[in-house]
Length: 172
Image 1 (cartoon, rainbow, N blue to C red):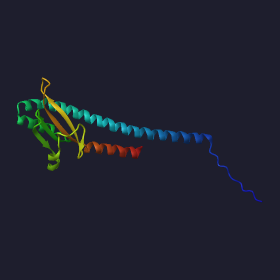
Image 2: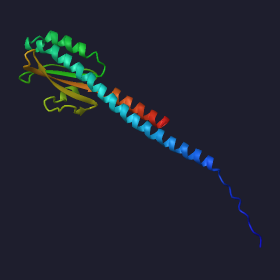
Image 3: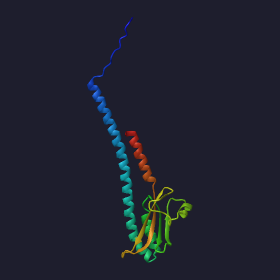
């Protein structure tokens, strides 16, 4: 009988430790990368919302006199300035009775712009890639003289999120 000899290939203990350590470090880096991407997305969303809140605060403060004095000319100028923001796609201003004072839409199908029922919108509601924000318009004595409804495009934000997710997959 012939005895077959098996060669035992043994890996030195030092190499095993190095490979184990590298595997743990790689896994840790992958997990941290995915968490970092999610955290960056959340921070981007919060930053966008803070910018929108600042824009709306300024807009509502400036719009109050235009509403009180029924100055369509001043309202037009304020809306033209606000619409310089490339993400702003829709603005509607209502007086205290709920009557529409002025409405402007940019980059939207006119049928869609007309069909948006701003009286039924809720804060943060998304319709056709627009996130809507509603704010009261108050005069200096803190009386509500109207309200504003603003629709902000989510396209740029979604593109940024997709880019970060692609980056996380590629380098994570």
